[in-house]
Length: 349
Image (cartoon, rainbow, N blue to C red; front, side):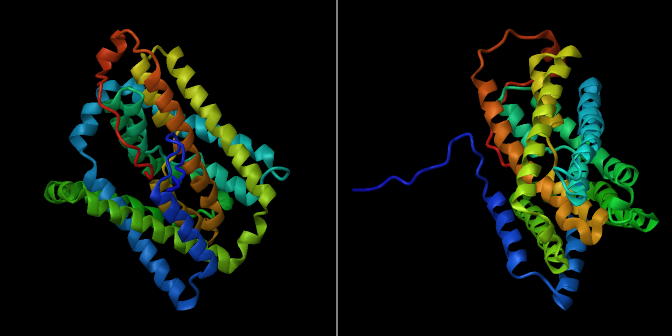
């Protein structure tokens, strides 16, 4: 007799990259980088962050971004969700200290609320749910671009000394490690854009490998400093519960708020998925610059929220796909909604 191997539910996006992240955290817990190895890992992590943002800049088509401005109301709505509603809810989480969250976890929770939206998974879920895919592409791109400036500025304003002592030196590091490589990528896109387009798979591995290195370095520093003794199972459970409430609120506000603003169904789908997510790929490198040695606890809420948003949005997207086909909404036609076939959730960005 052959026994069938049980498989996870189809709605559960068990991504190999998520497993790789978990394995990297475990490696940092068992074999943290110390001494010279820590210095080498830190230098490599800094270089990896700069490489990531150079690739982001080289991939973003300025012409496509300018063309997407035609649907400016939708993009402003997504930006308002990402950089106004989320931060307000993050500030409200201060009321959870000290009974639910520790001050360190609350700082990470607030930082999570300041990170830009995703691109890849927002597009994937919008396509599955038969939403406005071009709008999701532009909204995610605009959010990532705005986040390079807005996330550090909001962190300086809202986190203050909690964010590792944000100062002029921190701002200079952000400019040199994030903004300068991004602008260099934009300037060199004319010459390197074709190469990047032909080697998407290889560069995808570079992206993910760079983030794994950042995670290992941050969590190694946390282990050496002994910060993980501050996170008890009860605190971890409380953090997950708080993030569940945060995600539920943003999914609800983005969906019904978009309807009150007069958007059609396809646009509302794009707004909900782009406006309720946070980018692990963009947030992790920023956290290492903003929080420094305190980055390990700061990125924990973002890593947990990333997996939670994938699981919940996968369920919502497939339910919307099974909804009866609604009558063609003139607002959807005007905004350029496409009936693209569903795509596979890649999940990490």
